[in-house]
Amino acid sequence: MYSILAVDDSPSMRKMVSFTLTGAGYHVVEAVDGQDAYEKAQTHAIDLVLADQNMPRLDGLGLTRLLRQHPNFKTTPILMLTTESSDQMKQAGRTAGATGWLVKPFDPARLIEVIQKVMR
Image (cartoon, rainbow, N blue to C red):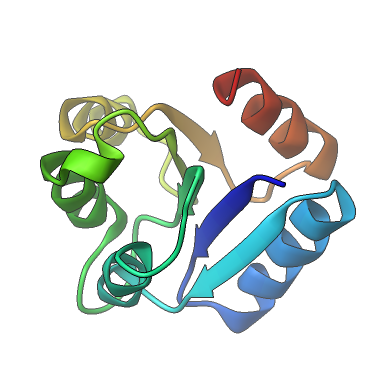
């Protein structure tokens, strides 16, 4: 079973994402912000990271940069799931090492489709 690290400072968004992913057969590790996610990534086997951009302590781009510097996460898919939709932010995500960019609100079927595509 693949394990996904779902990172969002909104409890309701984490629950919606977790519900969607567990329903599709994934194991979900939840984190409340980028710093919490980075700490949990050190102690859990993570196959994919799904992160919000705007979070306290450490945002999604900062988390992506930190994970890409770590040998265990150089090739791990990192998807941004955020309300940010500007081309400038998407480019910043690519530069930081994000694999893909999804805009909230999310379509559960599309989220699963994208996750399946990047985990091949």
